[in-house]
Image (tube, rainbow, N blue to C red; front, side, top):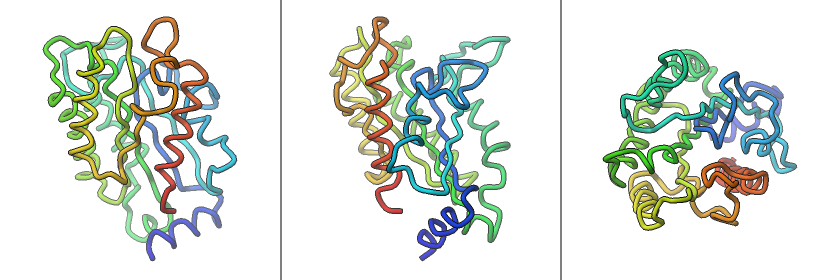
Length: 221
């Protein structure tokens, strides 16, 4: 009943219900932000004809972000570790997500799409990468329990053994409820959708991710 009420409220208000995407450079490729950039999967998803009325997308991707903390820095000394940026997200964009009454009418969904940069990190292990991603999910749910938190599996990356990536995704499938798992790792096209650098998705790959995410996020409106 609450989910139905929230869905009707989103349509009635025509605003307020939001999908927040939290990923690396396959989610947002510019440090200045990706608002309005139609290349990346969040914006493509929101432009799909199946996108539900009353919902919006907030793209909070950041190039170079990793799920685990490897002690590395982004520009201007800012950590690349996602945990640092998640705390900021919880204190800003999601700060009022669970305010009583309002949380029944204005829903939030958070998508964590990380791990690509962890695949080639020194000393990283499949269970370690999966555990770091799930720890982010658990932290978000601990602080903002009313937010629906989804985790995306890791898509192909060149020069990374498929067996290694498959083990990470298998671990994620064990740790994350099936209805909260977005199978980017199995998106149509696979490695053929990688650009020449072997890391970043082409336009076709971004489209495939948008369709996969949309199908999971709104499977049970």
